[in-house]
Image (cartoon, rainbow, N blue to C red; front, side, top):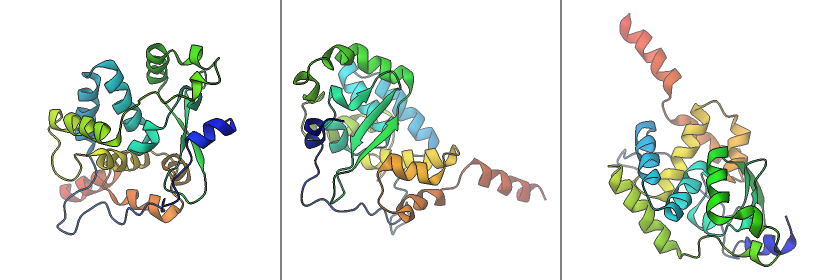
Amino acid sequence: MSNSVARNFAPSASARPERVGSLYARDGGRKYLSAAERRRALAAMDSLAEERALFALTLAWTGARVSEVLALTAASFQIESSVVALCTLKRRRQCVREVPLPPSHMTALDDHFMLAEIQRSADASNVRLWPWCRQTAWRLIKEVMDQAAVVGRPACPRGLRHSFGVGTLQAGVPLNLVQRWMGHARMSTTAIYADASGDEERAFARRFWRL
């Protein structure tokens, strides 16, 4: 990544390491989307106008923070390998992480934004793809959650990020890889996502119920 692109991703001086703490609030309320809720949210995203859909889906498929996706430019994408480079904004030191994207999503991004063509220009490739403010992005995700009938604490961008952490671990992605994809400074932060009950755990419970 060029120095000019890296500067576009530079975190603020006030950035602090992310602290998840727990997947549940003190009243027991869940902070992440369940698998069924995530499927409904992805379906709702697919129904949006293309530019809005691409933003929401990029957020969902990377587990990134809103500000990290808003910072993306054409230069952030490796089209042939279907990888996006995200600057981890909640680190004191600049840290860029690479996250794989579904090839179909990368194709959609390339077709809509003409990424390959824009990448030929040093100036154009460093222009943000979504020139929105954070509030606009948050409202978009709230609309998606309303349409997907997701309510409560998970119905926000952070809930989508938490569901990425839970979902990747339940899919068998190694913990250290999930840590890198999410930009966590500490493995202990990522490990919290393993606390969610997955299919394997429920299978053990079903065996117990049959006894």
